[in-house]
Image 1 (cartoon, rainbow, N blue to C red):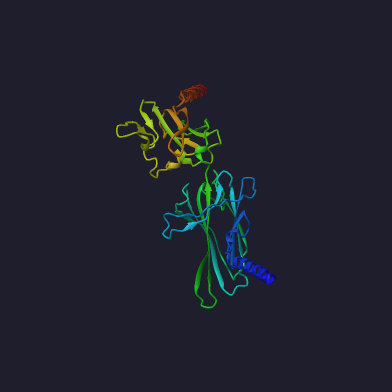
Image 2: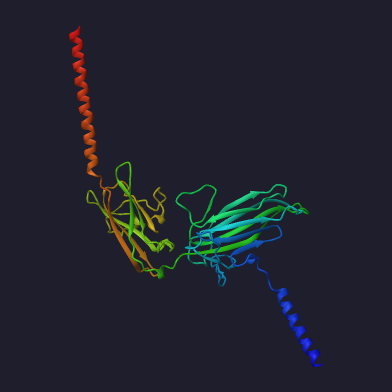
Length: 366
């Protein structure tokens, strides 16, 4: 009896374990292991794999799901977290199994929604199509895409680029005609969320200095491209790195960069760019933030102090640095033009004298 009881207990325990394994959910997002994320169904599979600058595979990290606060459904999102400083690109592998399907497939589309934020509870706002393809007779090649996280200075056509840190939401959808009903349908494999995390500004305390490149314009007024020499702040949220400009013009007028830089209605300084931030060609708030700054005085001659100030998350100053530049025209340019004019006048006079001498000789010969 004891043996039967023991066998019954063992059998019940094994049945319990088997039942648990049978009803445990499967997560297709992790079908490729720790370093790749997959969404799939019977027709398509899409796999996302992050790579470093040395093209080695990165393992994303995960934590508790995040509730999106401005989503009407109050959805919970399980982010794949990557450090911005490590992630260079995401390899996207699109595979299909539609050749033997009884349905007729029309097309598929990979779209991206994005928001530059450090608050992972926010929802994405900007949506664009990364890639799409038509399908003919259920014949479709597999596709591999490379999505670079940072946009370079020189854009290469037909290459996919992101916008640095923030929230990335990928969505793969495809359309087909149902063979039985003849009705068109669109289906999604499900969203895939990535959180590209900037470095924590509060953990960095480093003095800064500048590299300054002088650029010349057609009007002989210098412009200056200024970058931080230190890489410590390269992958922090650019909003913590703030540039400002103050200066005195050649006519003793005092200047700031933008109207927004004035301290109040009693601040009578002039703005070098009055419409800075109002859709003019020099517009973009990002021009005043980040690891580099292009200073253009908008044809104003003067001397200007360019300051870079770095703040922590509480708004306290971590460090700052100032450099002074000038856009006053070099007087040697005026002398150069004067010399050129004098040389031309001298040549004209010499030519005139030679012409007079030649004409007089001809008169004597006649």
